[in-house]
Length: 114
Length: 115
Image (cartoon, rainbow over all chains, first blue to last red):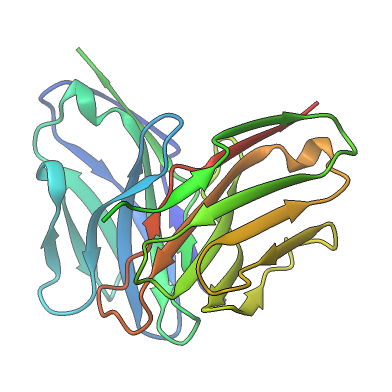
């Protein structure tokens, strides 16, 4: 069965510092990979996605992620965070023969402090 | 593009009551998904529709839960005889079948509190 593991439940960081949110997945077939952000009491908004091609993908708000097939990882990075990046971040996988549903990790709470 | 719309946004009910949530997907999207999210957890898949056909149901979807999409447009999720453990955010998402973007578009969710 496919699964997604987000290695850090909480990541505190100071404003303008770099950040990395880690995600590993488990699957025996090809996957699509996603990062979503969720602000309090809101739905999920897509940050970026990897479908194929270049393993480094860029998303909104200055975020990027790198797909590493050998390590089955898809870590999210931002070189300099802002207070407004404080939110919950979810990594997800989609399996091509499973109706397009997403399987989510448990989330990482990013807290940016001044 | 009006996005995915969910109603109500918040629902407080007493244990044992029935509740119904509605989801209106993006108009050209023929696939519709329901997820449940409890506090501090990631969304968990419940079920999905392709047009009006319900193609998959998670084991999380107990007999007290039923979802419909009668005309292939909006969908409803009903929970009968609610329990305190049903308290959660219920998220709806949609996408167009065959779209190579792969992503799901989410609504803002319906938060259920069972007292």
